Image (cartoon, rainbow, N blue to C red; front, side, top):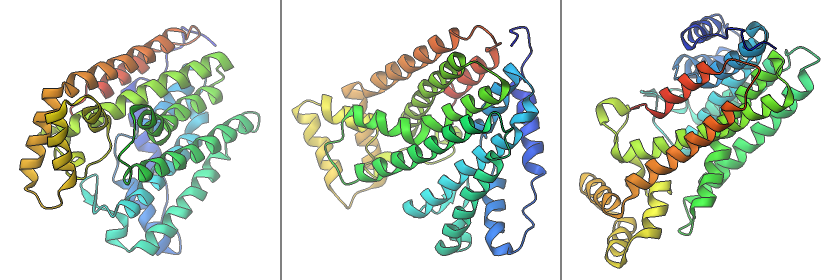
Length: 327
C-alpha cells in the first residue's frame, strides 16, 4: 500500500462504470425474464455504490479486479428497488414507469429474483483469496437491507416510532450497502483490516447524512432541482426524522395541528404540505435536521482522517457532492 498511489478520480470512475454497464449483455432467453433487468439498469441513477467500490479498490490496488463486485453490488441495489416499487405500488422510478407497470407484478418479482442470483454470480467472480471476506460481507449486508425494509414497512402502521429506531432503520436500509460497497472495494484492493473498517464507518455516517438530506429536501427542496414533488413524505405521513421530531418537540397547539393533518383522509394536498412545512419551521425542525446532517458528516470525516495508507481526497469530494446536492 502506498499513499502516493493516485486513485481513480470521480470522473474517471464514472466513465469506467458507464463502460462496464454498457458492455453487459442482457439479450438472453427468455427475453421476458431479462428485458426488465436491462430496463431498470438502463434507468441509470447516480451509481454511487459501484463507484465507491471501484474507487476504494483503486486506492490500494488494481481497480479492474473489483469490476465484477461493483456490477454485483449495483445489480443487487436495483433488485431491491424493483421489489420496493412493487411493495409501494410505485408508478414511477427515475422519471420512468416502474417495471411492474411496464410488465406486471409477477414478471417484476421473477426478474427481481433473477437479479439477486445474478448479483451473487458476479460477486462470486472475486479472486479466491478475497472471496470469503467479500462474500460474507455482501451476504450480511443483503440481509440487513431486508431487515431495514421490514422496519420501514412496520413504521407505516405505528405512531410511536422514535428517532433512535428511525436512525437504525435508515442505517440498515441505506447506509450499510454504501458502506459494504466501499469496504468490498478496499478488501479487493488490499487494504488492511483497520483501514477497511474505517472506510466502512465513513460510509455508514455518510449514508445516514445522505438519507437525512433526502428527508430535508423532500420538505425544503426546490421542485425544479429535486426531481420529484416536494412534500411527498408529508402527504403520506411518512415517519421521517422530520415528522418524528416535530411530534416530539411540538407544543400543545402545534401538536394539535400536526395530529389534525395526520388524521384526516380528505384534504387539499398543497394546503397540507404548506401547513405541515410551516409547523416544521416554527418548531425548528429544519435547523435540527441540518445539525444532525452536520454531526454525521463530521463523524464521517473523522473516520476518513484515520486512513493513513491511501489518498482519500476523492472520497472527500464524493461526500461533499452528496451532502451539498439539491436533488
